[in-house]
Image 1 (spheres, rainbow, N blue to C red):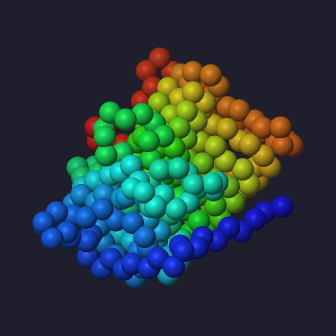
Image 2 (image 1 turned 135 degrees about the vertical axis):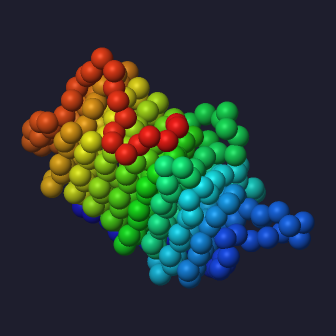
Length: 264
């Protein structure tokens, strides 16, 4: 049975019309609560606790922006049970456009660059109508991108050092030309209609984990090599053979996918 999960933000409603809120000292104040309307982030943005993007909202993040996730202050980690996570997270029900460039990628990470994977929650897509990531680096999260019943594209982006890279169900997901490195599991999914093409999936504990009932998927042209425990894992509720012809299962020198030339 499929469930539709809606998020209530406990009556919080904040509207950020500029790139971020400004404290009296002139420094960017950490964001929490709810983002509504048309919003643009640029420069340095900090998130303290759970920040929700409303259903009708549209958030654009400019090239070169760094988004830092803080340890949540008391009372700001509002949503911790599944499908959410402990720690600060961005919960997206509206439109999210995150498009950097090779020269100016966009970064999502924990405030302490030396902290381990799982130090913040993740980018949580909940019935989002449009999400685009390009030239983005996401690191140190529980789940870099977690998605339910959304439409998303991620390409030319680096997903490194997370407990899970991409974790999704019932999502139309185009995943192409991305390196996935040093994650617990690079890509985990069920249901949905993902296209997973031309990615480098290496040095993770598990490469691809299909948990149950895959359908309308295409997994092709990926270089799946050097993952520590398993290249591919199939859950008990995968009823049929999984079609994965046309992938590469080892090279002497794994190369990054086309279009990903900026430093890690």
